[in-house]
Amino acid sequence: MATVIYRCPVGAPGECPPSATRGYCQVHMFQHLERHDPAEDVPPAGAPDDARAATPAATPVDAAPVDASSAGPRSAVDPEAATRPARPAQPQQNRHRQQQGQQQQDRRPQPRPARPQVVGLALIVAGVLLPVRAEHRRGGGGLAIGRDEPDCAAVPGLAGLDQLSRHHARLRWIDGALYVEDLGSTNGTFVDGRRIGEPTRIGPGRRLRFALDLDVQVVEIDEFGAPR
Image 1 (cartoon, rainbow, N blue to C red):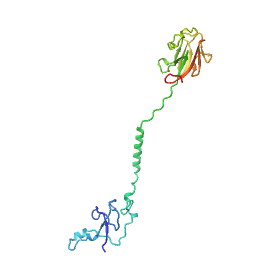
Image 2 (cartoon, rainbow, N blue to C red):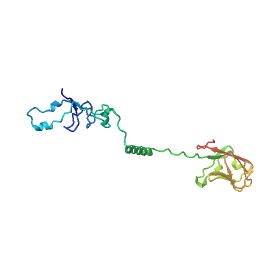
Image 3 (tube, one colour):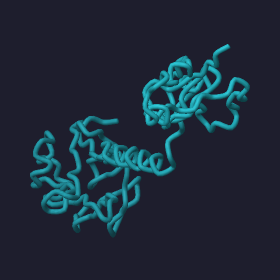
Image 4 (cartoon, one colour):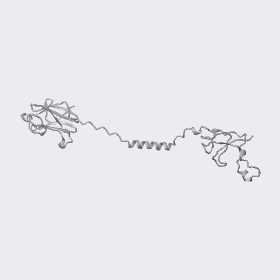
């Protein structure tokens, strides 16, 4: 009975070892071995000696089959080698990918910090809302109170208040806080019923009185100038 072996169809003579069972080539990992009859390699009688020498030796009939466990991670006799998952990426490749991901994340637009809410204050004088200018405005901001002050020109009937001085008081910002200061008026400036003699800090809800007949309320306004 002739011996049947399995050989790699793409390898050069002597490059790929034959096998007694079906499987894959140990050199060309994913190449199926093909059935081969050693009798075909025997040169006919009278052939040159070099032809006989070039013919590879056939595998004995009783040759033991190749052990798949000794063939390495992708054995030639392992039919499931082609379906196994790919090897994990090398650590250097993983670090490179992490660096690329970090660079892409750094290029993303970062959210801008929220601007602090600016608190605006105003006076209600005879039913008229007089906003206090912010301190970053020219002249330091604030508000001037008096019969001849341009800041009070929109208040009706103010010029007829004899108790109010022409330049009675001034509101100004000091370190982000609002203060009221009497400008040496005859009838004085009052905060919550108390006459003041030096700059006094005020805020929303405080009640001011200039002279004897002008009551004023301090209110907070939003960015559009409307009372909160």
